[in-house]
Length: 107
Length: 115
Image 1: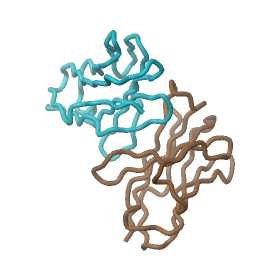
Image 2: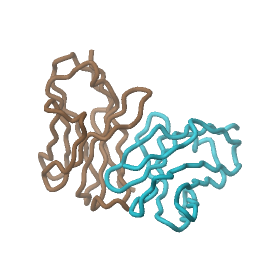
Image 3: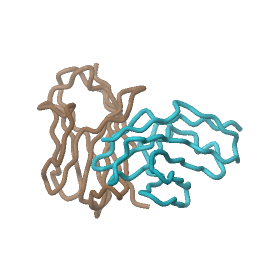
Image 4: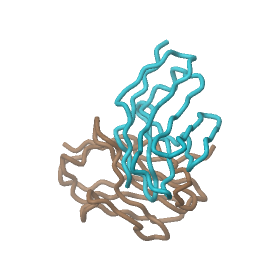
């Protein structure tokens, strides 16, 4: 499985947008970029995924660089409930979790 | 919204004892998974299961572990003789057809403590 690099932690103010970066310079053409998050004391939860084009859903947006070597998860308006560990995952098969980014939301 | 459920939420056992962790995947899903997360560490893949067979397993999933779908709804993880290092959160997940574009839905986990 190709590897991803994410910052260990980030902070954001409540009700402001959050941009969570992920580098995946060794991504292959068949790898999908998935994001999951893990709220405190809960199981991982799917957020969004994409291949080449930017994607939007009710939870977030995913911006994928043209060369696909990086991507950014965008939470448009962070709430306290968005405080979690966010995992950027390249999938060509099973899910392999890295350490993720711990997102702190400041009230 | 359908969800994956797991029982028990917490289990304490003595080293060497057998434990069975239970999961009820989402009803129309065909692919099932177990993961574990040792406190403060990453979520680790253990095993995937489809059509009553193990599809893939990690190095962690040794002979002490087994999985079973004993009926149409439950999916179980058995640890035959628990060790202290088996203490972790165990998450079950399921997906519809197992494709890499598909979401895996995770349960809330079972916290296993081996004494």
